[in-house]
Length: 132
Image 1 (spheres, one colour):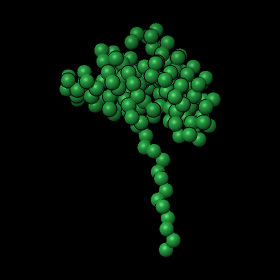
Image 2 (cartoon, helix red, strand yellow; image 1 turned 90 degrees about the vertical axis):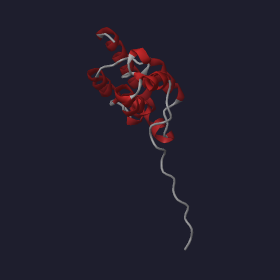
Image 3 (spheres, rainbow, N blue to C red; image 1 turned 135 degrees about the vertical axis):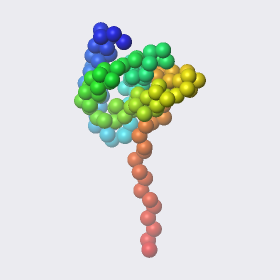
Image 4 (cartoon, rainbow, N blue to C red; image 1 turned 180 degrees about the vertical axis):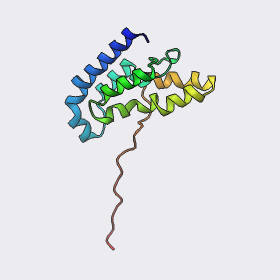
């Protein structure tokens, strides 16, 4: 991704965060979920694979660009970045750095193009209580 493309991505992320996510932080907190329309926008923008190589469907953001986007994501609830953090972080980076060519061809396009299962664990459930 060249500098102009990155600037466009960063500006789009800034708008998404400020216009779509911040106004709905209370809803996100209450439901413990990112609204489907916001999730769809993140998918359409390529955020589920912004650090993954372009040849596998990602945006190919550098480490510097990743940090710049982290500042934008950090403007709102951590749940937003958490939604796609695994794809760009531990899962994606392990495949990029240590995966076989076959694993990369199979998994990286999937990580880059669509949400994986949630990277957060659900809220713990209370154990049933019984009178003693």
